[in-house]
Length: 342
Image (cartoon, rainbow, N blue to C red; front, side, top):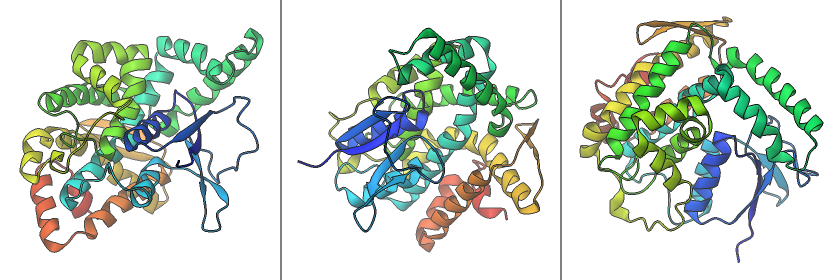
């Protein structure tokens, strides 16, 4: 029997939920340790503390702490056969990568914004979050952790990009995303067709919080897209799904069904990603740009500079024929600017 993979996470982390659902779908045995629980001890520490943290063998067979969901998925794709989540068509794989990145880096802004801006969402989070690790903790211990979490996370809103200037853009984008997902899922079980891609798990992870846990965005999801809520519940455990090689979207289908969602990515995330890269290159302290006709300002984010580089490397690795195919798929969505602008 294959030895279970261990990782550290919490239910309130969209990336923990992303990876746990991925492992379930891939039928990879795992052992999840809840951060802060009595089991969270004597584990290797990553260079950057992120959740989930996986404990995987290095070339010498020693366990090391590994973070970052996107490269983790690619690692498991190469190390474990069967039930893959990276589409075999390089053009569809690029679309999948763009949508996964949008989920992880743009939709996450909505996750962070709603949770730590709206009072009802803050109240629920600080009531539940400390209890995940220690259900048996005293009320005094719970209150202390709740105060610490609220102060820390509210103080990080500027880093995540949520502030009075950007709030209308974030909330309008989230509402449109719900409608676009609902439209696509009317006729398709997953973003990538009849089987999930990495982007399915990325968007699912964010929606476990936005559409399920946090009351303000969850109420909006119920009003605008109940189909999406049902989809999140289903993606939670796809261990029983029997995927087939012909279940992936084809290039001819992308424009019709995923085109509107790619337009949303080009309307919001792409302008931010390019402005963030310019700001990092200039060494400036503020990203200032216009998104969807509205002003956007936040602290530059070095990791999202790496995200842009990774997408450009994926595009650059395409053959000339596949690059032409990708250009046709992305033309007019705004996403083509990822690869045409410096």
